[in-house]
Amino acid sequence: MAEDTARDLRGVLDRVEKAGDGEDQVNVGEILETVGQRSFGPILIVISLIAFTPLGAVPGVPTLLATLVVLIAGQILFGVRHFRLPQAILRRHMEREKFTRSLGFTRKAARAVDAILKPRLSWLFSGPYVRVAALGCILVALTVPPLEVVPFAGTVSWAAIAAFGLALVAHDGLFAIVALGFAATTPYVIWTTLF
Image (cartoon, rainbow, N blue to C red; front, side, top):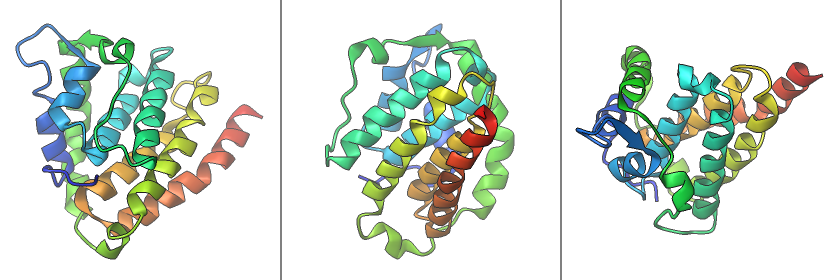
């Protein structure tokens, strides 16, 4: 399930930018089709990147993105090899200009992220790590809806999900450990944000 043709963040962004090419709008289905419906890592990265852009501050968007993570990661957890999502979600769309502009925000950081990503501790990917990552992503994604009341309060949650995705794409076990660290801090962030 972790087989991904893109091996760095810039490669994922290059693929995503082609979604719905030539159209005025791009929908969730086109994005998933572009990155590949068996590519768990790139999909996690794309969802997280959208959450980090100005679109992530639009009411309802963080919860929609978290729902996508839960639905996709849940299928990974149960060994489904080809993602299936409700048509109502696949048809959700945004203007191409906003989508491209949002991706542009992340390109500046992509070079720095790619410089530190490399295959290491790859033994973490020979066992059940993908399912552990899927379970971690589900638990972290469930923290997003309550945090939506405070703009960008879910940053730590999305950082954890992005780190899981990056670890899977680059087969970087160190990033996998970083992802677990981010995930472990999520309950503290919720507590301090909401109480």
